[in-house]
Structures are given as structure tokens and as C-alpha cells.
Length: 269
Image 1 (cartoon, rainbow, N blue to C red):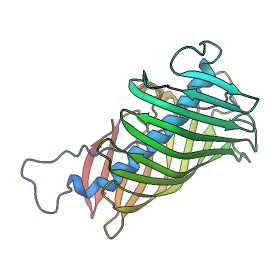
Image 2 (image 1 turned 90 degrees about the vertical axis):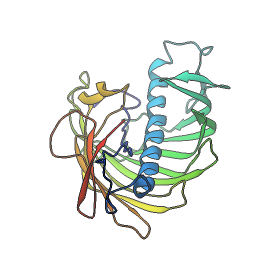
Image 3 (image 1 turned 120 degrees about the vertical axis):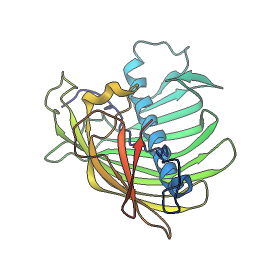
């Protein structure tokens, strides 16, 4: 099993870059049709990113002093504060405020609980609030329960989206090779609920487990995209939007969205 406090974060990101033909018809998907899905995707990305920042902090703490940005401050034997101060650029985005991490044990220890909370935390002018809890529930295979409660993003234009999520991450290959990350594979299942910035309530359900390869980590500064899997997102009173990552084991940014049998190609950022 990996001797790491954190594993690379899981990123499930969906965008609204729909490839339309020139002559739009009434029954084609429009940007408004996928607004809830877009906010679901954005929320997932931001909270996975918070986990990745935590991972980076523990890995870098012995190499950096506390005078840089962000600064790292341990509190006792069970807490870490990552402080971006009034603002600095980290992983190509401007951040400010604090990420607070409280942990009962190491990430790979069965029963350990790691909690993330946010203190006046902003990314590129958008305020992110909420709590994320990662619990090691290892049984036959290494696994973690990942829960986000009271997730909230206030955008620069003062529109607000809300998000709650419960997922399970399970290592299905590579957990026994402590020195090699490239052979790691894990699956993700779970659900989410939210309200988009346009006030549209929605639910999300992973209907086919999302499969990730750590070897795909190279794609974009630690962001990992599913190679297979399906997520159904259903806005209140509307048809389900089905995101399908396909059946090919390719490290790419291609997905599809299907609404009422009509498929559009999606390019993930």
C-alpha cells in the first residue's frame, strides 16, 4: 500500500464546450440545458483540487519554509493550516485565505479520518465554502468514503451554487507496489445533490463506476480524468443528462453528453 498521506486527487470535471453545427435546431442541446451539470462539474473540480493541495502541502512541507506562499503551519500532532494570505498564485490560479486540515491518522490507516475546512478561501475571485471528510474504510480492497457537506461557491458576479456529495473511492490495482504509482487504478461510485447558480436543483448519480489510471496524471498538473464510466445528472423537472467517458482505456479529455437520445461531444478542460 502506498506510503503517502494523500493520494493524487480525483478530478471529475465536465464542461459545457458543446460542439454545435452552424444551423441550430430547436431540439439541440443549448448552454442553458447543461447549466446544472456545469456547476456540478465545477464544484467537483474545486473540492478535488482542495484535496490535491493538501497532498502537495504534506509532500512539500519538509522542503519549503513557512515564509513562502502558501505557508504551512502544523498545530499539535493532528492539524495543518495552509495559508495563502491575501493572495498568491499556486498551480496557475490566484488563491487567498486558508485551508485547514484535521487528521486522526495517516491516509492509508484503516479508520483514519481527514477533515478539510475553509477559512475565507478564494480561487480566482470565487469564494469556496464547505467541509470535506475523507474516511478510510478499507476492507478487502483499500477504500475511502469521501463526503462534502455544505459546499458553496460564490462567484465574482455574486451568483451562488450549492453542492453536497458522497462517494467511495476504491483501489482496484497497484496498491501493493509501494514504490510505483504508474500501476495504480481506482474506481469511484456515489451521488451528489446541488443547486446551480441559476437556482436549478439537480441530482447526480454515477451509474457506471468511474475508472481512473494514475498513469494519466500527466494530462494537466495532477488532474486525472476518468477513462471509463457514466454519470447521470438530472435537473429538477428536466430530462437526465448522461455523461459517458466511453469504453476505451485512453488518457484523453473526451466525453459525451446524451439528452433524449441526442449525443454531443464534450472536450474536458
